[in-house]
Image (cartoon, rainbow, N blue to C red; front, side, top):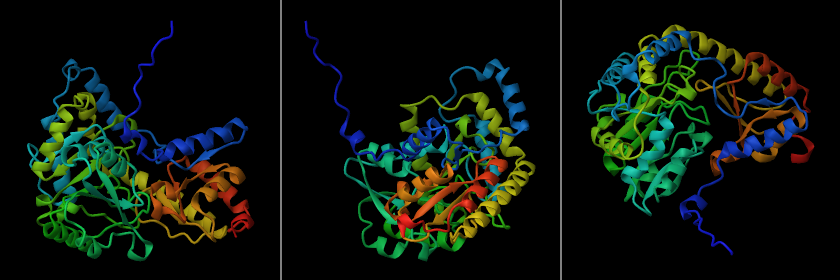
Length: 399
């Protein structure tokens, strides 16, 4: 007896998704490892340093408390929301209502990906920066929306040119932005945020700002918050994460704050999808936000050391690299005429170094490669030696 095939075809929305960037990178890396090469992975931004001990101790206490074991509330612990509000006031001088203007998330990526489900109908347009963190685009597609690229160009400091957007704003449902920026490392200042808030009020396009890297900055730079601008809470929200600031990527904890109506809509989506953050993780998050400075200062010193090592090595090999003021990435323009995929493959084949091709972040990322500084310093020194042993760029194959 022949059995009838019953597994359905995948939904069209899945066929519209671009290949997730790091899946391709992992395949390349695994191929090299199978060949016996000593691969240094500078592709994915996952901190190599452990979560600080004071957070681990808070987590251990919370795990022993049976009160943290049931389903959490979808809105998050009141104590956690209160500490977030206190941190925002200390860090940015921004006042937030813990009851209505803050929503804890299972990592900021989760909230970013779910947000379009609250506001985007099939066919609606959403502005996404190009290049960008992929979930801005993929979250829009999964909600049935149509991502529209907004170029981030070096000649504009990798900030969007808001002027031309005004003419095409009608019907745009959301505008995703991210500063300090992944992958370009650009930092936006308060002057840009003033223009952005004014733009949002004029056009009626809500702003969704991702500030996950606000605390990873160097050389005296202190990236501001979009919400510092008067009127910002009327037109948008801001996402934050403990992942990069406290080396907690696997813990999955972040939040969104700002406009109460937008947060309420996202909370409604989440109430039908997930059950919130494990309460013990929220207790650890409370401790993280109460006492961050000593940990941050040590971590930033280490990232600055790594940044300078890699910038020096790349410059000696013919790359014209500007030291970033924020994030733990280098956004390196490729010497010569090679494209980003070719260059990433050459780095892997000739030096066993994994770097991320810029085109994976969008068409306007072509011509760049992103290096992550989140590898142990000894391994980064070895990567620097390998880069300096390469022939001066561009290689003959891409000249």
